[in-house]
Image (tube, rainbow over all chains, first blue to last red; front, side, top):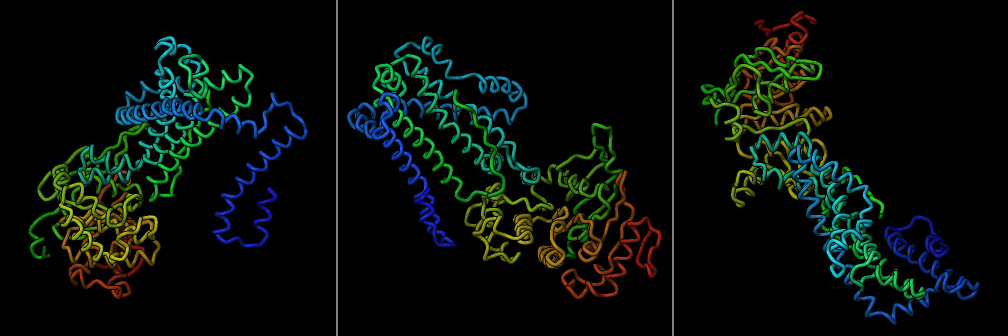
Length: 279
Length: 279
C-alpha cells in the first residue's frame, strides 16, 4: 500500500483525489501482488508446476488466444442463458407467490431444497438425462443456481409496499394491474436487481463447474480440467484468468444495470442480500 | 362550489355505525353506534384520545374498512361506490409519496390512474403545485423535501381531482409546531378556495378549533361520540377570514376550553366555559 500512502501525503483530500485513489489503490495492490508472485517464481525459485509465473500465464494466454476466446464465449453463453431463464422464472414465480399465499406455501419447501442442494452436483445426472453432446444440462444448472437468489430477493421486494401506499391505491380505486405497475414493481425493483446481481456470479460459476462433469468439450471449465490433467499448468491458469474475467464481466454488467435503473433511487432501505455459496 | 349551495346537501351521513375488530385476544369494539352528518362544504374535526376510533371512522367513510353494523353514505352513495367514483381525496399522517416519482409525478398519480390526458394533467399539476406553493419544486424528489413540504405535496395530490370531500387523518401529526400552524393556515385557505367538505382527524385541540366548523369529541373503549362542539368561529366568520390573529383572540381560547372540557367528560376544569352544548 506504499503507493497509496504516498498519494495521500497531504491532509484533506479533495473529492477528486479520493476518486483517483479509489481507482489507483486496487490497481497498485494488484501490481504489487503480481510483482511478488513473479519474484517468488523467478528469483526465489518456486517450482513452475506448483505456481506458474504470471509471465508464463500471459504467454499461454496469448498463444491460445483463439481457444480462450471461444471457450469464454461458450461458457458465457451458457451462463447468460441460464441467468436470463433463471431470473425470469424467479421473478414470475415470486410474483405468483406474493399474490397467492397458497403458491407461496407450496413453493417454499421447493425453493428451500433448491437452496441447499449442491446444484452443480446435479451435473452428471443432467448430463446423462440430456445426452453428452448437449449444452442444455449446463444451462439448466446455471438457471437453477440463478433462480434461487432472484426468487428470494424478488419475493421480499414484493412485500415491501407500505400500508399507506396500499391504502392510497385502494382509495384511488386502482386496478390490480395498475397497482403492480405503479407501486409493487417499482418498490421491488432494487430487490430484484440485487437478486440478479448475486445470481450473475452464481450463473458463471455453475456453468463453469458443470463442465468438469463431462459433456461437450470446449468450455472454460472443461479446458481448465484437461489442461491441468495434462500438466499444462500455465495454460490451465490462463483459462482460470479468462474465467475470472468472465465472472467480473457478468458482475459489472449487472451492477451497471442496477446503477442505470436506480439512478433516482430512494436511499432508504438497502435490500437484504442473500448470498449462496457456490457448490 | 360555494358555501351556500353546500348547506343543502350532505357530504357524509353516518347512521348507527358499529365497528368490531376480531383480534387474537377476542373482539374489540372500536366504534359504538356512531351518528354523524357532515354537510357539504363543512369542516368537521374528529378529536379524542388514541384508541377512540377516530381514524377507524374516517377509514370507514373512505371504504378502506367496512363497518360491522349501521350505514354510511357519501353524497348519497355507498362508501364503495363513492370510492370507485373518486368522490373524495385523502391524506394520511405519513405523506405516502412514491419516492421514485418527482413531486409533479406524485401529484399527477391519481390523474394518471384515472386516464386524464397528459396535457390536461400537466396543467392541473401546475395549478395544484401553485396552490400549495411548491411550483419551484416540481422536479424534485420526495427525499429532497422537508416533512412539511412532503405533506403539502400529499395535500395537492388529494385535491388533484377536485373532490367535494377531503378526508385527512392527522396530516400534520408528524410536523413541528411552527410548520404545523403554517400548514393549518394554508389548509384553511385551500379548503375555502375549493369549497370541499373536510373530515379531519386530529388529537390537537387548538388545531381542531382553528380549522373546524364543528368539533366531534370522541371517547375510547368503545369509541363513541361524546359531544359535538360547534365552533362559533365558523358561524361568526367566513372560513377565509380565519387568520393567524385568530389564534390570539379570546374567543379562540374559549373554544379550546370548551373542547378540552368535552374531552374530559364534561366536568368543568377551568372557569369561563361557554359555548358547550351537552347532548
